[in-house]
Image (cartoon, rainbow, N blue to C red):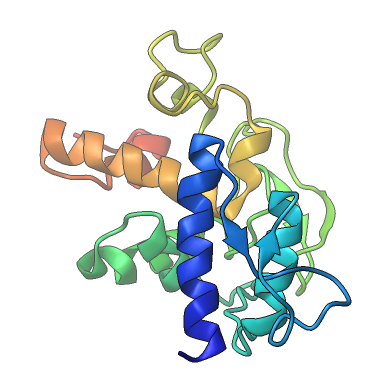
Length: 203
C-alpha cells in the first residue's frame, strides 16, 4: 500500500484515538525515515501535524483580495464590493451614481471634506454636515442614538458612531440596510438619498 495512503489512514485512526485518549501507532517523527522505520506512537498533536506537512504538498495557488486604489471620481471597484455587501445586481448602476454624487467614491470623506485626485483630505469646505459619512454619506440620524433613539444602523448593526462607517464595505452594508427599510416602507429604497429631501423641495 502506498505510504501516503497509509499516512491518511493513520491520521484518521489517530484522530479517533486522540479524541478518546488512546494512543494509536503512527509513523515516527523527526530525523527517522518514516518509510523504512517501524511504526511508533506520536507524543503530541503538533508532532503529528509536522509529519503530515512533510508529505502533503502546500497549495501553490492563493486567492488575493486586492484593496482598491481609491481615486476621486472613479467607482469601477465599487460593484464587486457592493455585491459582497448584499446589494442586488439591478441596483448597482444607481448605487454607483449615488456614490459618485455623494462622495466621488472616496470612502474616507465626511460631510464637507475636500479631497484631491487620490482621495486625500485637503480641507473642509463647510461644517454643517459633518456626520455625513463615507461612500454614501450616511447621515448621523441613521446611526447616532443621541440624535435619533431609533437610529436603524445603531439598533440593527450595533454601529452607533461614525468611525466604523468610514470603512467602505461597512458603509455599503449600512446603506443596504437603509435601502431595504425604505423599499419596504415606501416602495422606494433610494429615499434617503433623494435630493429633494435635502433642499425641502419634496411635495
